[in-house]
Length: 69
Image (cartoon, rainbow, N blue to C red; front, side, top):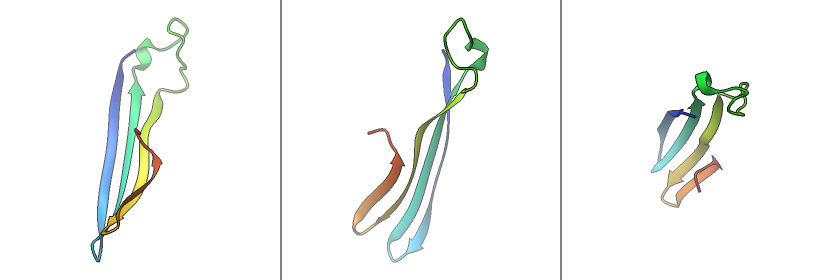
């Protein structure tokens, strides 16, 4: 099964040395190879790999959401 990835991330300077940031990454399955023969779910061609928001500053970095580790 072939999988591609699509990601969007960004950050915003909040001033006073603080930044807000977000990250979203999706896995996109090749639907041409999905179905009964492969045992994969046709209704779910997308899955979330990474999705989080965070705040960074002099205190370090705090991130909430789905992460790799």
